[in-house]
Length: 190
Image (cartoon, rainbow, N blue to C red; front, side, top):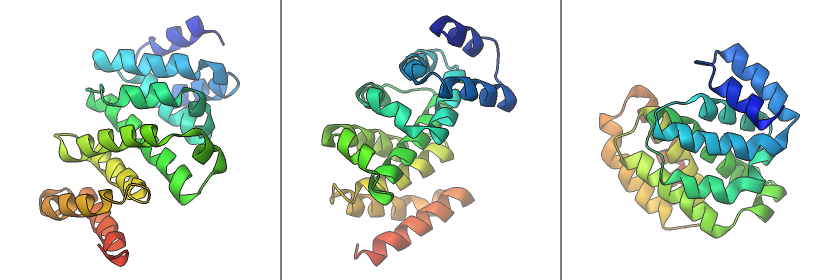
């Protein structure tokens, strides 16, 4: 697959789940196109399109390591995100990365991700958690922040305060994840 073929497929109307899966299968054979796909996410975010972000999320569910060579670009772009349809998959990618780094302690992630990059994820996730965003982005963000708090210890007390203040007003999905996260924080002594 070439860059032009990728652009053509991403711009051929809304992608069905089957078309996303087919495209992901092709992209698994072309990891060099991950940066092209990531750049397309940032372009689509400006015009409220989301094919690229959905494809990137599904690709990284299978091959999260494909993001590592472009992790600087990924983290630098997070603060600029505006479209809810793009923020949701990017928040999910942040959760997958923080799980790989902190929960699974995957050596390749630990060796290739800097503290500055983790701080950028933290900033974006706090913005998404406390801002006027949809529930999925908030849920993925609180999980990422929980993991990030294992390195940046000041996060856990702040996260606890935010969750205590917002849990009563949240949807059932938000309340469920917030309660589980609060239980973990209390078990850690916060």
